Image 1: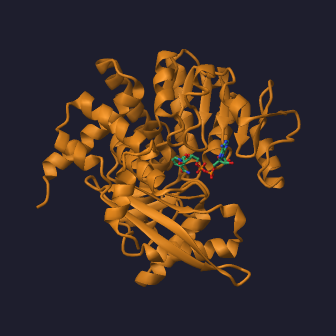
Image 2: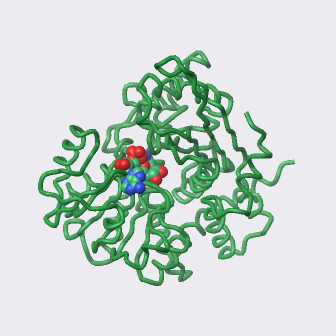
Image 3: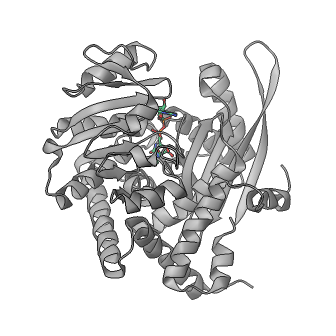
Amino acid sequence: MFTTLNLLSEILSPAHICPYDQACSYLDSAAKELKLDPNLITILSHPRRAITVSIPIKLDNGDVQVLVGHRVQHCNVLGPYKGGTRYHPAVTLREISALAMLMTWKCALLGIPYGGAKGGITLNPNHYSVGELERITRRYTSELINDIGPAVDIPAPDVGASAREMAWMMDTYSVNVGHAVPGVVTGKPISIGGSLGREMATGRGAMIMAREALALHGKTIADAHIVIQGFGNVGSSVALLLHQAGAKILAISRSSGGIFSEAGLDIPALKAYADLHNKELVGFPGSVQISNQDLLVLPCDVLIPAALENQITAENVSRVEASIIVEAANGPITLEADRALESQGVMVLPDILANAGGVVASYLEWVQGLSYLFWHEERVNREMEGLMVEAFQKVMKQSKAQQTPLRLAAYALAVGRVAQAIKDRGLYP
Ligand code: NAD
């Protein structure tokens, strides 16, 4: 384990433009709006803990490889840390630190009793066998064994990870403490205490946000033309739900390329096609190939980035033609592009609101796990929808009252809640 001091100085070094700087810049804007005490900003702009671990694993060919994993715990003033675990070659401590801070705001905005955290391993999961991925996940979990737990920090899946990895994490933790602990992770399989509705929850939340935003434009989902970047957990769920509600999905992409159909894509058929073709979308009957760059600038009612950070940038923002952007991914719009979209009159539903369906359903899963009482899917969906719509309305009200963009309104609500909790709890010692 490296020293936290070195890691924090790496995260906070002013020398680079990095995701953490971008996250701090949104915090600063909210703090200015709220006229927050600068001492509170100092506290909130530092993650409470940053843990980096070596993950030595034996490959199937007998060689040993050492991977690097992180877990950053930003703030736990409102409750246990909560956040996903990312398996991606571009994972860095800075990225994970930024995402941990976003989680703090997301939980606070939705009014759920969690703090923010995020984890990640720098690897391309496609380059490892299932057995290797299991050994990587188990070793990563065991390196973090004293830092996670149902009352401490509760991981969930993020890019490149799924219910399968959560089952391995839950099992590793449980074996180490000597009894089954379903509440240590969320997003796990139903067979071991996962919640009905969790798998589709982030996509469902994004669909609800698209529906509410369209209603403000006098439209319904059934009238809408939609473009989606990413066809993983979030992208495929939101696509399916919007398709079921009658939307025309014009284009969808994944990392290796996208597809377009003027008539609209049949999403269940596309999902079946991708399952048969190693996740590839290109070649789907009735569609033509489109690049990710061209997809982002297609004319549409709603653009849903559901892949990775920094997709809409200063370079392509002026060509964006969507009326509404629902940030299903975390941080898909850079700071500069965000300002440009505001002046272009594009309604942007910020990530801390738009993709919060996942953490809300995770919270409901954790509550069910702690109480050993499991709910029907309708109840999970209903409770999640209630919290999402309430947060949407609060953000709209704040934005209208303060004449601020939706992102700033959402941040002001979230940061204000966390700041108040810090003030009420006081600074120890
Ligand atoms: P995933 O790994 O299941 O899917 C990611 C998808 O993005 C894949 O289809 C991949 O091919 C595609 N992709 C990657 N790079 C791309 C690129 N440059 N252009 C186009 N497509 C690209 O991940 P996920 O869980 O669906 O997460 C997607 C986003 O949603 C991430 O930003 C994640 O942090 C965010 N998010 C996820 C959840 C969740 O519950 N899984 C919750 C909140 C937020």
